[in-house]
Image (cartoon, rainbow, N blue to C red; front, side, top):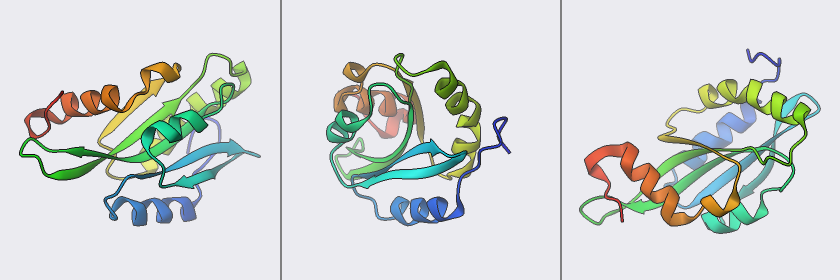
Length: 143
């Protein structure tokens, strides 16, 4: 249980498991609403489009099956967990999301990379691809 008492709904976990094995660019944006973690949006948009839709004044958790190529050039995906925490968020929201983050990450199997960010300009496809590659070792090459 999280320190905030907020838990992940089992239907979101089941939806994530289906998404995880489809191996295509897609994601889920989660938010806290009425003391529950709920699905804000399920999307097949590009990573850049997902980032553009994140609110400027509220945190979100993003699960995104990030497309990239491995070192031999084959298509692959890596499951990214993005903890979006804009500085313009209220202190109460920041505390709730921070206190629930560990519960969220431990609820989803197969997260290869976790990133905490508060600046959309740092969330480009290339910068995230390089972070994933550096954390995945020699199987993925950086640009």
